Length: 135
Image 1 (cartoon, rainbow, N blue to C red):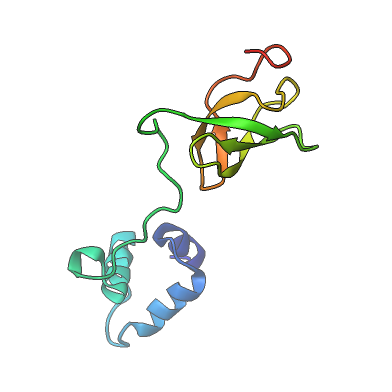
Image 2 (image 1 turned 45 degrees about the vertical axis):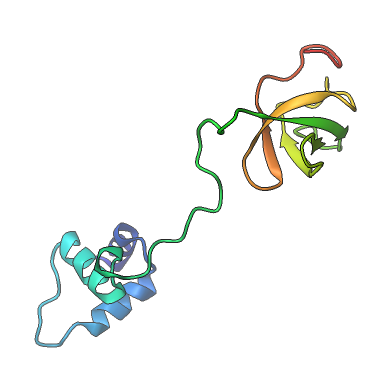
């Protein structure tokens, strides 16, 4: 089995595959199946089932509806990039960046519903305004 294919299947680097191959006892046979390699990798790393370290939590919130619905923000600035607008959350006043399809019809002071993507990056929770300053 090629190292590149094996590394892709296991989700590790080719260097890690070489380390696994070097760690196999010289008298033992190398695993011939992908499942055998997966078991070898789990044994070397210690899987979460065997008391190993749990996987790290995701950095971004999972996709789907936000508990409590979209948040309200107020447009504060329109940068030169037509795909983003700057706003402040109504609750807390945090400055955020909002991704939009086009910022052409947004006006300063306009209230917009937003959904979080990361801590400071948000998506517009609905289609953009059809007319200048009006939904």
